[in-house]
Length: 465
Ligand code: ZN
Image (cartoon, rainbow, N blue to C red; front, side, top):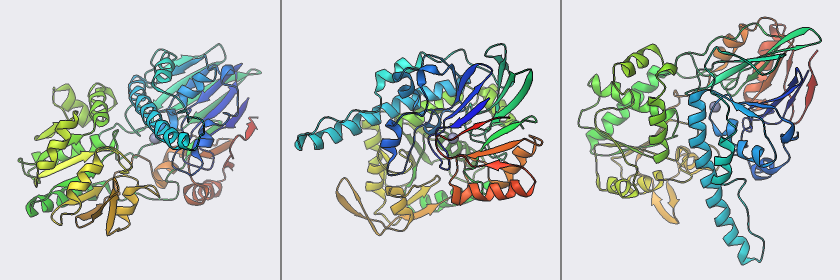
């Protein structure tokens, strides 16, 4: 039995782990490297294994850093089966098509520059046709808690990870030399206080654990306080006669904010006259997928859905898919909440909303997600007095707010609670974290409890037992 690590090894992106057990080669996730300087090279590098030899890919959830290299895996020879939940499969389709589209556009832009210098065209990592081809490799969907036999020796079970819609941890049981070993891969874990999803299922006792540590060194702010802060910012802005721009991630954060706005309007903390725009075709499609999976939600949200109500549809909400509808929002001087992508303001429609609102002192811009170094979102969060959009300098006069309590990840205490259910594993492997931030903290905490902990490096391998 052998485990090797081909992504998210002492870093937070590119999740990809290979388990060789019971005569099978099983990959858990195949994510894109994102955010750092050398990600193009990392993404196009060898996987560290031969894709044509992989029998199964178990996909924990639809975030790009977990599913984003699947089309490349198929291009390079993967011919096995991809196993995941129904919701993850639907969201993955949306995410991969969008990712291919962005890569095609980036490659086209880069090629124009290169051609001027007489260089060859730049090719995208994969295009939309590659994505359609890759989608054919998805096998039958699995339900949470369902045992799926991959062969006589290996059984897998997906359990709810409470992170985003459809997300799972994966429990693998493999028999070798008449000994059964149980290994759990956490995937990304959500916080038990998530307002819309049902809580993560606690894992069973295991021999080995592979656990994420995104926030292994941090405690989250209280979510209630964050909701109250968001309500207050919107109420104050509307009273001043301005608009609120919320740069929005398409999955999870958008639906969570919509759910909160519905609650705030119904409890009269926000005016019924509030105009709310979800101005992102991707977030609109994701919201429609969310509506189709009542079974994944907290009892409160599930009951609403089963009663025919739409928990992500506050009064005054308009979906604006068309470009003309999006530009028409610019005519609104006040009383609107405008949710648009991209979440880090690196592209997308949010940039034209910033252009029309960020120079006006009566308006607000509210960040509810992570803003990576080098992005426009980070410049604004860091207090830039002036920004450039499409080459045009724009003064920042609007009120800028960062509300941090909406994380989809478990914090340190929640991760420790989750792993405590695995009993006395022989080794806990920590992945999906920066070593100097969350991971080393988590390692110390677990070692104090007497556990053996490893923080694998990229492409390293361990024999189990
Ligand atoms: Zn995730």
